[in-house]
Length: 327
Image (tube, one colour):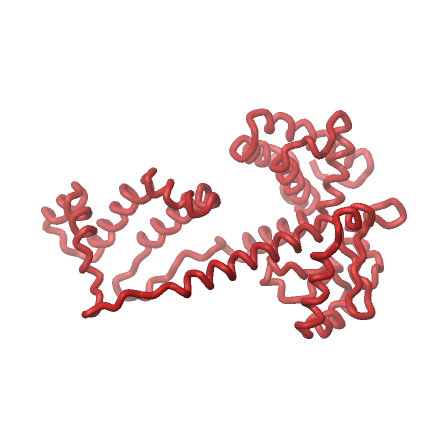
């Protein structure tokens, strides 16, 4: 959303024409590429033109460099931020500029990591490495009670083999503080991701089918198409409307400077507002309870009550203004 005539409105980033709502906006490139830093919100005509413009890699890189070279003073003085691209002027929110810089920095870090990983020399081997050639792993597995019970059993079925590996994973990898620490040293994000990955691995092993051999199906990322669309819409609405949501938060926390509020609290409230305003079938109370619980897990000890009070105030304000009709 962009500030037009002192009001926040949806607008094409290229021709700057206002839209009645975000559904009329088009993402210029493939909607599958969620983290493309140049994932713009455009009207149909401009989306077609922009695809031609960004096809020129030299011009696109030059444009991105212009964004990188903007000073903080320049960004802070413009709302929206205007950046020239060819003969056009592209609008950006200040948040979008920050996202572009973060994503480019992330991509640069990924490229460096790939380069360093690819430069390592592999040690030559005299014979093909077999899966059972790791004596250390063999000792660890064979010394467990789970393995001893498996070997003592008369059941030599595929199901018994499958259950052995499921139990070993659940016992020695799922609940392994040492492994968790190693992964967390590699990336802080493993702190959250490992539990999800572990759950997926255990469910995948449980679904193994003897007939499929090594070609076992992995669990899908989403339960169904509806789940995937929910995640996609929630993500987009949170990003596209971030300035408007921060405006609402600021209005309902007048005793607080927005810069003093924990950044995680702001992100949680932005996402909550996106859900409240974008999904009419989800009751407000359900959304409030969900994000208060998320705050307890990911933010400070006082964040739950603070977020609950702030969101409740915003909801009441929107209802009075006729911008929110659901309960």
